[in-house]
Length: 366
Image (tube, rainbow, N blue to C red; front, side, top):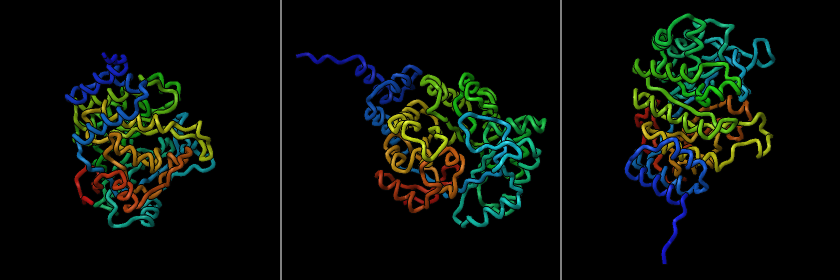
């Protein structure tokens, strides 16, 4: 009796063969995986790649999210954090006010300040420089992970400095690395349609390229689940992969699901859990040269983030303390987790929790 293997099964077997032999997947391979209903096979392949790259270790950090200002010139359709100047709820913290906020929440195990904010035209570039200087002066041992590549492009515009000069000025003030945001979906069709009034695809990639050439290791995100096509998601991953081939400057890739405008938004307004897990797994398979894929519990929720650790993710992010951007957009997750909760989350997935610094140096293996 002969067994007839259907075409999709054959195609999946070919992809599995590529994965087994460490061969790079194509755009067409990625699209096939997205269109496949075989979530478990995709997850198994991603898990295999992750175990090959990172073993059973899953990383996390004691960090704190800071937001200097929510005033922003851009009107991105997916953002519920931004405000116009003078609008109710708009704020811009002085360096002293930020230090006062940090003092309330700081503890000696804190290793990283994760700083993002609006593109605020009401203050000069010096404001951002002075803010970083103040943090570095008060907390010299805490790594400053600040500003997206889109923010760097914005600073370049308001200051008249080149990307390199902007970055050098921030490094001199105490900057250690860039955050991964502002990438959204690296497609001009998407950016135009979603009113992404900030860096273009080429500008975002160029800022990263310049940062990497200066020895700054950085982060990269993808904001999926709105109007982008599956092809645009895969192309986004390929852009990052190609730049990583060139510079080897990215530390981690962070796929984030877009959040609805309200905590009370029904299930139909949220990205399907099936899509979340598939995206984590396909990210691990496509972006084969960035060491880590992050399962961002703020966007995934804690339990799905835990499952994602067996679907190719090797980073559970960090303690955060109080996340605001996703929560302004209706995220249902907690605003932060304690170290014990993160360790429990990782152990629950039969993984080894590893406390790290920003650059994935191991501090403590649990």
